[in-house]
Image 1 (cartoon, rainbow, N blue to C red):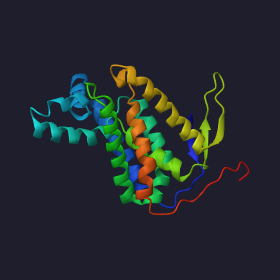
Image 2 (image 1 turned 90 degrees about the horizontal axis):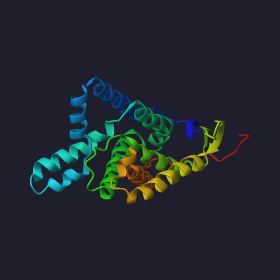
Image 3 (image 1 turned 30 degrees about the horizontal axis):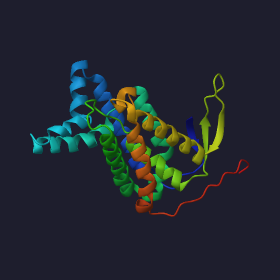
Image 4 (image 1 turned 120 degrees about the horizontal axis):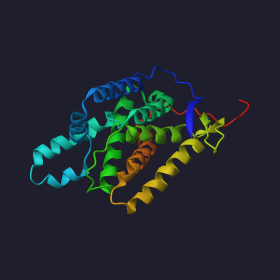
Length: 235
């Protein structure tokens, strides 16, 4: 499913959401300008490589410092244009309402905390992986989880791929985001039998960890009461 917009208006200007999107685009342009070898080194240094933790006994300060930096930096790295567009598109559609509920400062910390928890979830299921993990999807998944809890019956204009037909219909958020999470969970469970979760190129457990984190943390970070938008085709 590809969402286009929801029917929940934001009461303020989503400054943090916009700044995060701008930062991701800026970093991607920097990546794009790097030569191939330099890009590979850049991604390996600033992407999250779970196997690096096995070296922590040899170089505790360097590994700990570098690993902590990579967890934050990896949230701004992307493997390709469509990877970037997908993450930023979902953040643009759903992020403004969550920022509206929390306020900009709280949303800033919420976003990065979800990203950190998502990354550690991925690490726990991929301790031996030497493939750099990158992307904002873990943090964005936290936003999706918070939105599902906040506005389960909001209407989301969505394109639904059905073989040769791709109808655009309004669906409740609980169906759009709930089905998205179910897909992540099914793929994540299936990936447990693989030698590396990233064989598919997708960090499924980062999505799962981020989404669950968002559903839990929204209660702690929300400042304003939720405005209920019930499913009403004629409204």
